[in-house]
Length: 227
Image (cartoon, rainbow, N blue to C red):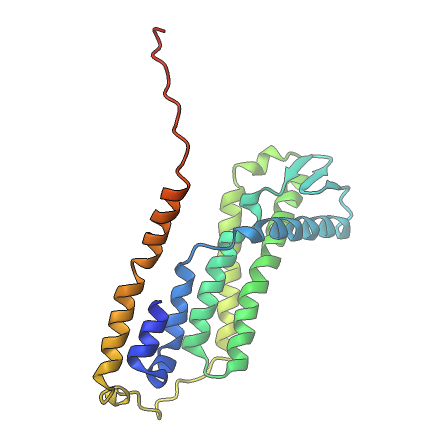
């Protein structure tokens, strides 16, 4: 609704100039939980493939990975979803600021999505290999978060270095002024504001109607301890 109000009030030309920050607002919507099982699977596969490449005995059963020194589980917290979301947001921001070419923007955003997924697999592989070298899985369990943050920080620095290597200078020859919407008709603003006022309570009103039609069952009361 906010996007359509801006489009109706400012017009297509101004909205196009504001397209990047407007679309950036969609990152405020909580999402991505459906990716966790797939990220767990990719992390486990990268870890097992790396252990086989290093000739370390390994047995895997889904998200469980066992080596002679102990067993590991690729849990939901180890899927790397948070780093993937953070990297994607930063990748979009960096691409808009540093590039004008659509191809370069798409390329860097793709890197900001692919690199953290692969890096998370390498992080998990590094933890298992470290446990193999130290001879105990419990020895690295307490430090796995520290290792993860240091590793992801290094990956972020490398990603920024790669993106900076083919950055473009800003084009200052294109003036961006307020004249694009200075002469916009007043009815456009009035219509957009009125539509926003009418649409804003529509969602809560519909939710209240659903609650009235399908009320939640009453919560059973607990008896006093003396009964």
